[in-house]
Length: 370
Image 1 (spheres, one colour):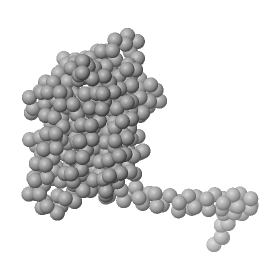
Image 2 (cartoon, one colour):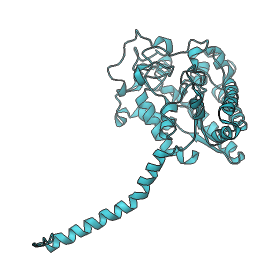
Image 3 (cartoon, helix red, strand yellow):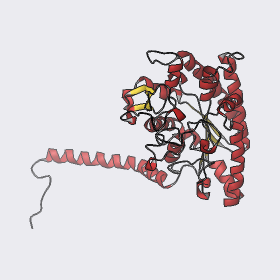
Image 4 (cartoon, helix red, strand yellow):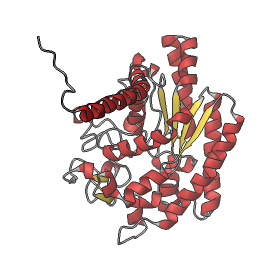
């Protein structure tokens, strides 16, 4: 049988091929650990559980059975969720807590703690205690007629007792100490209590009101830490002056972001991030991280086409300039393609926008939390 020489007739080509094969093998060897790490991450969750505290950004349906007008357990909310079900999430689909849990490999969605469908297994991998329209200012919750932030801590204490019964104290302690906690609130305080209802304006200028919020937020974090949380991501404020409803309230006819409201967000973020650093230095064995969402959301709003969006100054629901909660309902007209909109209603981003935001935020901060 005649032996075939693959290099016959072109020794120069043979040398190039050998070099290329060598480079390819070297690249494979270099990438192998990375692929192995990704594969291992997919098999093993980066945390045993995810816990959410705060307002409508991370509410998974806790407001459904509360006495408040701030609900969204009706269409068109949830139109892009599994089976088109309106779960009480303030969006057309998933919200930040769901994406965080998914990226960490914990589960695809984080259920509401007050849900009547909550099972024992749901408890073990984390829940959302968040309630739409709450805030750090006690007046914010009173205006909305919903539970306040301190009550969410009481619910968490109750949760711990339930898990202790289900899985034992040792596992409960492990879930809490290794679980990831995300705190996301404050937008309602600035947007609604201060600027819209103006209940606080006669008594506080913006800097003094920001100080009130920072003190309350710091107190919340310290209480959460005393209850066992050791991996805490604290979410700052978004550019509130760019929320469609706030643009409308500020009277911006050209639909530009309101700088006064944005400056309030910037001031709060500056002060709370400094407080987070101070607390982190005092909390031994704790990962306490400030999560900046202001920068990424402002970038998306100012350069929507760079992220695949077309509209960033109006919501998809209704006119998009003031509808939210009960004003966004089954009779509301919807935009033809919500994936092209940054905002779903006049306050809350679309599922697509949330996904972009969370992926960018975790890409930057996950190494400090896990």
